[in-house]
Length: 115
Length: 109
Image 1 (tube, rainbow over the protein chains, first blue to last red):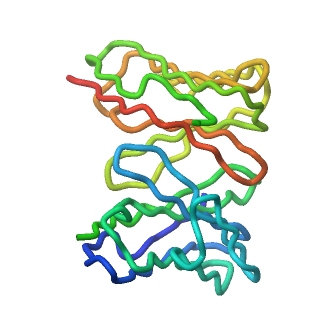
Image 2 (cartoon, rainbow over the protein chains, first blue to last red; image 1 turned 180 degrees about the vertical axis):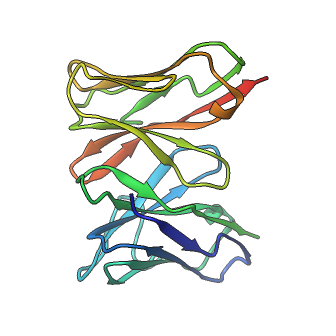
Image 3 (cartoon, helix red, strand yellow; image 1 turned 45 degrees about the horizontal axis):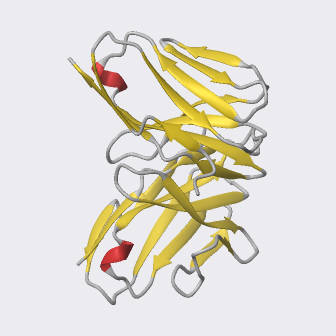
């Protein structure tokens, strides 16, 4: 499986500001995903990020609030814009495994607290 | 409405006990995965089941995929404190995963 790292691991931010989360993979991958997870709860898919194309957002998530970049096959960023306390959550990136079209492998997550 | 219903939501048991976590849906999935997540970490893939009726064993963990590929179960035998964590089932719909609500398991020594 791929080794995935995320930066920052955690942050405390003031409302109204923006935070960019980085996701780095140790191998080239076509598909990357960004999820949000409330502590102790399940994962909600924010968007799918493919290199060379616009990210595809799930219902309830919009590009203005969560802009995503995917400049190459090993890196992606998710920005949480104009943050409010409701954005406090864990943000996770994942990639599809090399030998499967559906198995996903996750980064360690970024714990965001908005005050 | 949750596409994948996972139960129970929370389970607190003593070391050595057995337990089963269920994942049910009205939808058919091409595959179903089980993940385990510890605090401060991302979910870690435990197993993928693909074929209806399939049973996979991973040491003390037994995973089953329903014949109709709509449901799955995870059975843990002789639970240990190291099994403590959040267990998530996820059904594959194309390249995307649909996650259940999760089961928080706490095994007390």
